Image 1 (cartoon, one colour):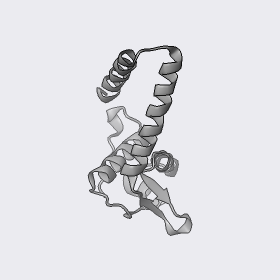
Image 2: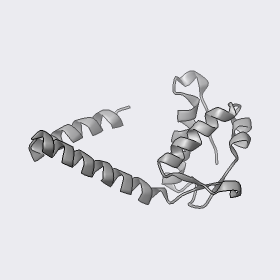
Image 3: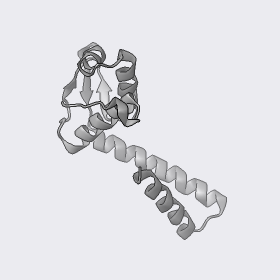
Length: 122
């Protein structure tokens, strides 16, 4: 696992850690079951505070990218299926909400496309 933190970049270090681990897990560079370094170990490697790495790990666990197995360590999870399930749940909630608001299907799709374009333009 190779991570590079760019302090001058403007993106919070925990977000850089989160994004890089997430991308490596999704691309297969970090295979399912790969054991990640401990929070302290990774913090020392990267020259970051342990709380910064812990925050990134918590976000990754919430996203379903990694899983903590108690004293056994932290591992890359089968993130694709967890991410797809979460996306489907969010999409269903969105569909129900726009239906209650009285939007047409075309209006709801247009709003979703605009939101996706904005999110992926970052």
